[in-house]
Image (tube, rainbow, N blue to C red; front, side, top):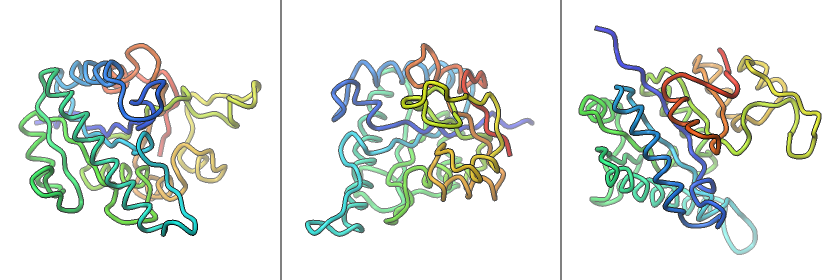
Length: 234
């Protein structure tokens, strides 16, 4: 029996905050939920990683240690996952939040078997808390979870609608790639993910797709394999 398509979706915390750039914008989160539900009802197994930038951006200095700063960021991603999973439930989906460290009764500890069990029960699984260690971004977290759980692909919903040879926000002549290899992404350091995450995907042959979060139905389409952005091959 052929296994259902399994994807990990990476969402920006700032994107879920809407124009306020902090906290949450409920209509934005509800829109994401409805798009995910459409794909989940068609049998796609979905894991979600959310950044923490709507609450905390990594910072260091005399006032705070880098390790402590990263720990605050990990907790920000847990708050995001709990909130967004509850909005998903209000839209009629079953969800579960997994973390690499204990959070009392608020989440469950991550294991591959546990994630598989939840997917078998048609749940949307949120992977929060990053890798559980400082100095690793949520990009690395999504790459690690995708590889560990044998996902078919990582989907990156971004403010920019694909991969460009330079920043399209500052260079009007920037060229968008329809398809690019992960080796080119690493060699040219194109910023699809941070370098550590890109290398992890390259070494483990994990394909990606990058698309614009704000385009109509872009998440629903991407979850069903229709990418209007850039496909990153391995």
